[in-house]
Length: 162
Image 1 (cartoon, rainbow, N blue to C red):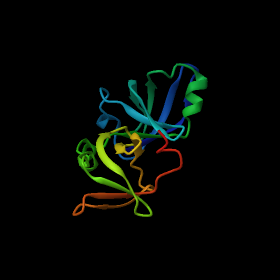
Image 2: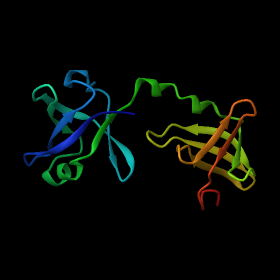
Image 3: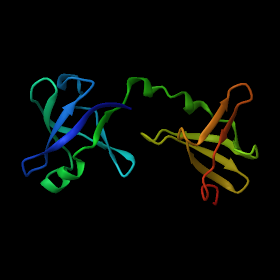
């Protein structure tokens, strides 16, 4: 995801937001595509109902689901992201059949699918106990070996308890 703005503050009492644009101009934002704002550690999609430029680096926006001062104030300071065009082709979605190993080299299972959750892509792994879903977070993936088709991961407690 590409950060394109930050919510500076609420504007008025009906949920409008003042945003500061960082990597794009207001005209570069596709109003038919969602923007993502991080809430509780996960990117949440919002559609822009209206966007009015205020100079070259700011804009007033109204988002779906944000219709009062309380909702708008909760988003103040949050970064705003757009899907990066490069993210449409994710090299990690082609891991089906690969072997997942724990950080100590024990076979966890075989990758049987991929779930491209924005900001939290996951793989489905067939284990001896059933199917588990593991997050492909940078801090959990220790190595990926294309030659041996293996992924070595830190497996957080409880993720394999089916």
